[in-house]
Length: 446
Image (cartoon, rainbow, N blue to C red):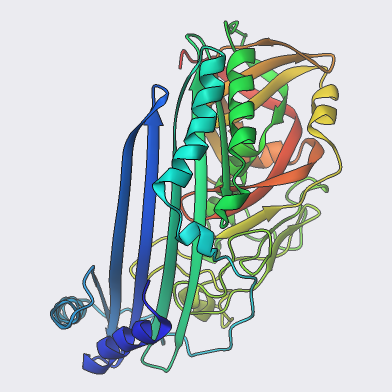
């Protein structure tokens, strides 16, 4: 990987060549590798090294953004030429005021592991072998992937800002299948030595075995116990559609006019914290703004929003460190979301259900109505009928159409353990939930 001095040399070279009034540089440097398996055997080992530059230039209030995956002199010249040409053809952005000025960055626990950065294919293959062997012992078929990566990011701008940070990541996931069922499990950590392939295999195999010969179930309202995979989907939608200051400013968020009011159940607290020890930490966002913990929901009360530079400037506030790379139209996003755990074991969650479902995860979830965060999707890789606190039979996958906000207003119990899950933009640390009612609207063969 590039040294910090080399990162600084590259960003200084970009900033020193531009004729723009202001400019910023975002540099990514990543080594990643993937071991993929299917039909109980490894079929692919790939590795990739990529370094990319994303350059933003400003002439007055005209902004241009361009990217390239070269950092030599010719690459820098080309990406600057394109960014400057694009800027000159833009109309003025009346809301642009300035790129962020440099600020001190908070200290964070290291999310970099030399063991992960140096991980060889043989190490990943041993993890895959554990899953495949457990599946074959039970006449099942396993598929999935084991990936490791080492990444670093550098942000710099013409106002004197420079920051760099490096992380590693190890992720294993698998779907284990019989002729009539499937089970899923995954684990994520910055340290590959914390990935327990035996636990992943046991979880997925158990689901596949228990899920054989599922029975159809009539749609309707049911109590549900949602495992962490499904809960992560809920937190993701609530954050993406509700917690962004841009969504509030455009009046498309359930948080509009409700700060200080109760919006979720009193047992629900959600926050974003990129500095936490229990996530893959990052001290600044993609604009170079220091991250901070933002309490979003505190015991059901709406109490905070996520800001990037643009949305903060609109309100005369400071960015909370949730900006995406230049050129993004999404506005600020939660990148290190947490849902507060409770006190119940997963067994206690199940025992509390009179008649309902245990759901492993959701699939193909899509927004129906953004203000109520009504979402439609399907169960996948293990759904089971619970009666009088006991799992009695597997059921065929069901389609649901459910307001995630309403669901979070009817949480009866919260699991005491939490797991780290990865989504497109965020690392979500979430527990399992027992919810009093969930609306299933149809069945699915897959």
